[in-house]
Image (cartoon, rainbow, N blue to C red; front, side, top):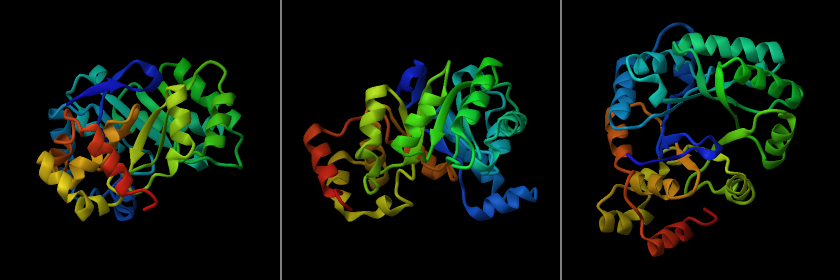
Length: 276
């Protein structure tokens, strides 16, 4: 597994992470205390850790924080980069603090590496939210602050709302098929050295069976998924976080690291999916 600096933190993080959003039914049943397929998902996360992945993303809404906490139990905590998120209905100052404390309990950890605002909430001033985030950093409960599903304008507002800290990362949908952030967000993040966590990096599985990649799969001896993930990891500051739900999928994802798509092929792959 190859590692690279995560934005402005200086921390070396695996170029591919693990996402733990599973599906709406998982979220619903997890709230009721039933974790469907728990053992299979645990094995998947552990397989990723064994393969060198140290970046794990979750959220209070996902119902998977306890699962992540169990998976990382026994690992050197300082070697891991655990990210979670606070839901938009919990962005008042006191609610952010309470949500973080509950996440810490579910994750069975004393600190969160990256705490992210899951979605913006126009009814709550971002200044109030960021004041709470900075308090969590000050208290040592959070190391870095991130946002998710923010537009460029909202990202700038979040930056301006901070007094002592900086925005470390933004998490948005990004893949060969979904290129919206390339218009303005990605260039801005590159300029500001803000890491980009790319969710849905395989476009809900569409890229796993896209025939346009076949010729490149044959050339590199890789699967379509591995090519699609490699296309993302070769970008500065971009970290795809494919879902870790099955060991076989995680093993395949591990094969997307530590090799290179040649520049000419990279351009051709990029052009194949323009405006798609």
